[in-house]
Amino acid sequence: MAIHKLETRSDWLSLGTRIEIDELSRYLDAIKGQLENMAKAHEKSVDDEAAKIDDEEEKDRFYEWAGEDHWRYAKTMPQIFLNSLFVTIYSVLESEVYKVARRIGTKHKQLFDVSEVRRGDYLESACYYIERITGIKAKIFDSWGSLKEGQRLRNVIVHSNGKVIEDADIQLAKKHNVFIESKIEITGRPIGEISITYEFCKSFLDALRAFFTELYKQIKAGNFV
Image 1 (tube, one colour):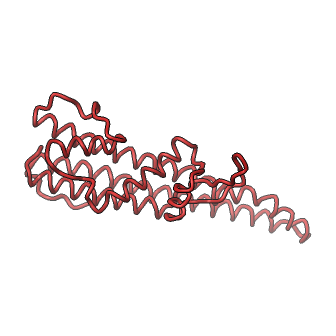
Image 2: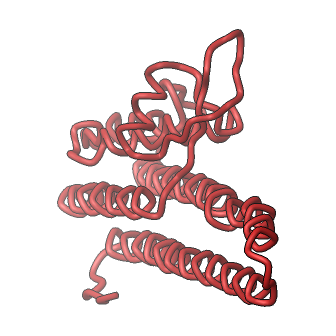
Image 3: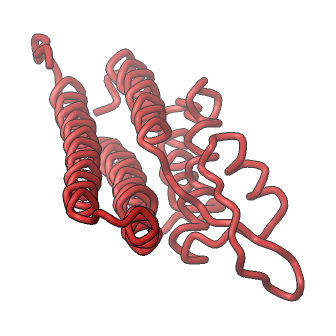
């Protein structure tokens, strides 16, 4: 990570945010590597055990029996870990925007707190607070749409345990290749599940970087912190 000359308070805030995002990116890579290693190690152990079986039919039955564990290593564990990490990434987005809003409010001696603003949701409330004081319209940033789509997927994970029921959410999950079919049915309707991928986490982190780069650029230009 390149460290640029820190001239203003906004430079320091920007550095802190970059460090948070970079750490999440490294953690994502580490999880991906660990999950892949675990899957390969399990596959090797299965093959080693299968090699000890001479009867081909018995060997086929053994592979069929081991298939459930293969699914766990190949699909279930990555889904659990990556869904959880994505929720954490989104939480960092909210906390960093909140931190910026608080700093701006403190400098401009606002009598109300950003947490008291209710503007649809937490992210929009903080951005509305920033806009009210500085005029910076975060909602017109190119990255805003990606953040809001990520927010919808995060809400499904957190509030519906990852189960996708609404048609709009199903289409959004399919758009980002994080939708898997489910055999579970509710009121006769088939549903699916959110299964966050490494690629989606990477793209969402890129959206965070773009968002905060633009936000801090405008904050620094206006000397708002």
